[in-house]
Amino acid sequence: MIRTYRYRLYPTNAQARALDFLLWQGRTLYNAALEQRITVYKETGKGVSYYQQWAYFRDQRRANPDTLGQLNATSVQQMLRRLDKAFRAFFRRLEAGEKAGFPRFKGRRRFNSLEYRHGDGCKLRLDERAMLYVQNVGEVKVKYHRPVPSNATIKHVILKRRNRKWYVCLMLDLPDPVIQEHTGPAVGIDMGLHSLLALSDGATVDNPRWLRNSLAQLRVAQRRMARRRKGSQGWQEAAAQVARLHERVANQRRDFWHKLTRQLADTYSLIALEDLTLAFMTANHHLALSAHDAGLAEFQQLLAYKAEEAGTQVVTVNPAYTSQACSGCGVVVKKDLSVRVHVCPDCGLTLDRDVNAARNILMLAVNPARTGPPERNVAGHGERALGSSPL
Image 1 (tube, helix red, strand yellow):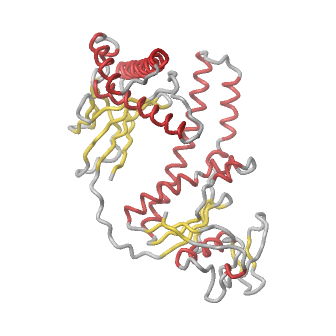
Image 2: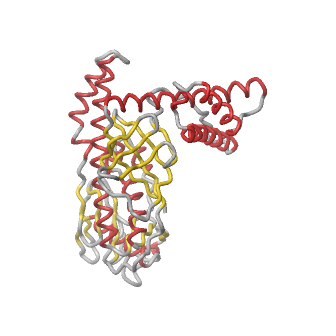
Image 3: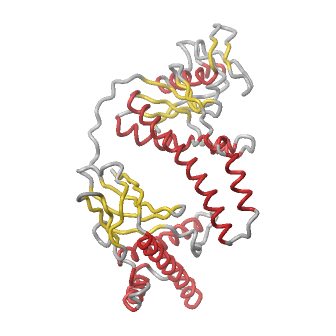
């Protein structure tokens, strides 16, 4: 099992300059390798392999100890592999008839990470306090907010710069967990924008609207950036402020979903979700901002791996008519999206439309052929076919 732990780094001013220099040299090498591939192909009609490029840039690294020589040899190999992977993906898309997307040269704002093999030019040291040793930089202070599991093996280390801050990502190889039998109840969940989540047991999760609550600050910061000459020092400071605001919103959203998905995975043994791609929300200009703000795709991604660790089963069901059908008797009660309360004229059931949908989703997961009690199958009306599948 592979997991990635991310920690904040606090380099000194001298260490920050050294890290920036390494990143600059990494970008220079990447662009030079891309230029080499393009030039050789134009002159000979043949490509250049990763091994040929490594032999060439290994010699360049030895010949220039003050520039490219500052980079760790394994880090150089990883950058060349990154470029090779980009070309392989380009040719794969080309053969499949997709939009090819030829590998691009990296500007200084588009190259923000260096990869190392742990123990080769980069190593986490846990003595009196957590420090990260980086070759030609020294020992950098780490905000060690959660310990690395004792049974984990650190495979790779990625140094990443984001919004003028430095982070280290430790890629851990962990043994597969022993899954205990989960004894919790089952629940159906309806995802939306009015309420982020509605559970079949009647609970709802309000939408915090992180981005909308920060729009006023963002407007001011973006207006300040727009009034300054692009590329100037003042423009760069304003752009950094905009980036920090967006980063704060993203951190709030991620923290919220991490805590909620952990709670759901620990509480329920079966979680039923709608099988939604969510693209229809982001394609609708009326819903796009709210859909991106909600981050429902992030919720699905985080829930999947947390449920796996907790022994919780996650299944997806066809969402067709789950909001229209009555969870009490199965009769289809058509209603517009603006109608937020489900009222059944047959059985008299009255409840929030999202909770009603969540109950239908749960029944579809437990019994794929039905949304209501026996003999009241909505599919029998000839309006839809329903089913469920593992996530």
